[in-house]
Image (cartoon, rainbow, N blue to C red; front, side, top):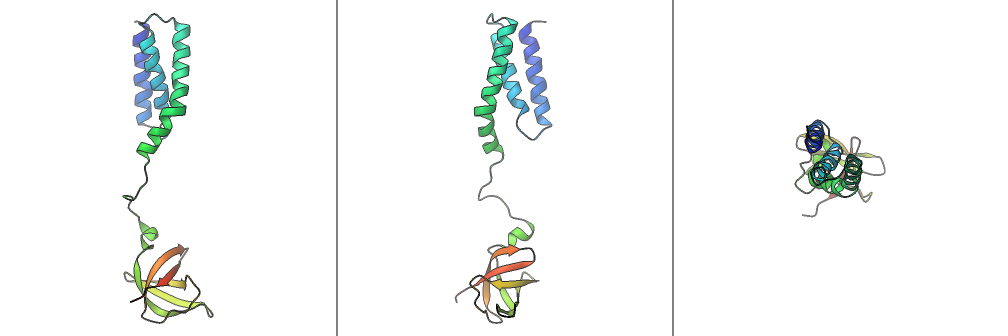
Length: 147
């Protein structure tokens, strides 16, 4: 078996191994093996093939891996919020007047009743429409909406 074939098998093995991992790291070794696979039939001896493998792998870790991570782990405005994170930005109705002096206050959002505080420490009357700005454990921070 020729050396380029060995490097090709190594590259394929690293690529297949990458399919079972999540770090986008093993594929960098695959890139190095492909470079060594190309160098082998061009006349590079085994010593230079290993150096090319190591150098291309290192360069892949430095330059290609960060780009692949940005590409595959992109978070943007298309990201769907779930669970309690979906509450932020939602509108609700004050079901118990929010009074910063006594710590009282509740807001009803989509049928759920949440303990609430106002963002500016101002009282908000019963029945007022509010927007949820922040969630801290089971307490929502709200802002009164103007009509």
